[in-house]
Picture 1 (cartoon, rainbow, N blue to C red):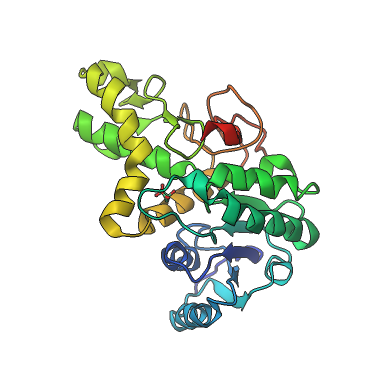
Picture 2 (tube, rainbow, N blue to C red):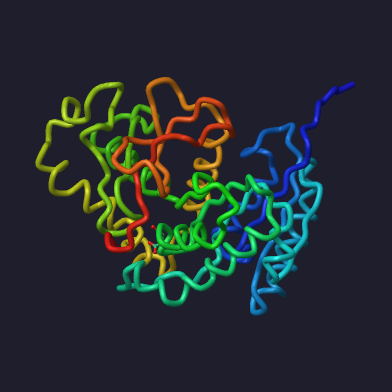
Length: 303
Ligand code: LMR
């Protein structure tokens, strides 16, 4: 007889739930690979009037997958209902950019969504809800959301920079000819935009400073940064739409980093309001301290 000690059910609200990123993410959440094999979850999915039919389809596919940990799937278009008692809010829904656009160009259209969703979270979510803002421009949207949710601790708001961290690690690993897991201490400074600074000076490869391993300093100084900055844009040119699968993976990574002790000596990147000028995040007590170092401030002027 298997004796499994189930944890208490957690509510995860996801906006943009009928979109491409969610189509990858939701099945990972439901499978247990994010919150672990003893953690039952309820998925509360937010869509728009336009996407509600598709959202019904998503819910059907989730149900048909018979995930043992997925105890409840609900859908809706009203954030005041869908965010009820949310312990996690993954805010993905927003208009994506097309070829040739900068992410900042989306602010007029998307900013309003995050003001409304911030108000809704403030009113109905768990007071300790962790919010990860993915819709672009994600740093500014996270700021807008946070400002509209004064009852939720500011430190609980994150803008997703993990995708940039992963991209930067990938480039360094390829250049150094090592496996990705050998690259650590990768900080992304600035906004998730073409002005971001992936910090190769503090990053490490096999525990050594990057410059000791990658001798081609010209590549580091002239090509690496731009490659990471423009990765999302190049992907849009290739695909005709923005990244989806790798974004979902990076959301999974971001959540795991917030609920797991950070490996000794390492850190990870996440956009937040506070702690400007410090290297990065380190979690010592999962879900307790998010009282730590954030590499990124919300500064719309930095786009
Ligand atoms: C990305 O970096 O892939 C996303 O932010 C989408 C985009 O607009 O680049």
